[in-house]
Length: 338
Image (cartoon, rainbow, N blue to C red; front, top):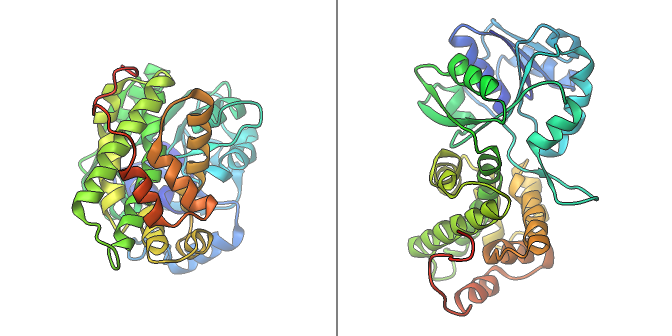
């Protein structure tokens, strides 16, 4: 198939992999300078060192080069998603399937934060929208490491087409009609990965360890599911690739920018400086959106709340941990949220 990709990070990793398995791939960036560097180096040395860009992958800053694409994959950071879609919208086919891989939210002055599929539907209302999410580090996808993800959509035909067309011997795609749950799992795990990174950073000078991190991950998954159910998602989704799977890989791997930024914060770096040193840290922005969901919907999210207090309120991580540990005791399973 003809696949147009927005973004030269995770998107480029996908493009290299898709091209290897026979697809015609065009990778677009709105930065002519970035494209020139990629063409000269034949790799993204900063984000994907060692992943060589084959001659069959077209690199361009011209959105008109995407006009014949059967599938458009948006892999830009969430804060750039709307602008990127607007830039290409005049040039893509009305029947092209739009696939999103970005994991986060867009702030919304008129209501709850928007999921990326909701942004896509606003900009391209006629095009079917599919979300691909799950445990999939770009560094590994680009090298052909076996990976399993989930495709989710309200459009069953588009979802199944993406699943069957883009699956191959190293990239297995399952499908799931619960697009809300899949998007929430992919976005909210970034917050828990930040918290786990902070825990790892604290370990150099404070008695925290694997027990602590396991508690953050399991109770973090609980509050992710709690919010998801309140928004209409299925609890079962959060036990799958877009929930537990993505949570494990993001909380435990040094490929995770969220975890790496968290480690710096735990070691004493100011949150804004840690983000600046690390690069795009979706969890930093996602924490603010998730807290907004929590407050407006009345859904308890204590780990998210304390992570927010660390990132935006200047709370010391040790104090945040103490607040979590000293909360009133309760039954482990939530009865109110299903």
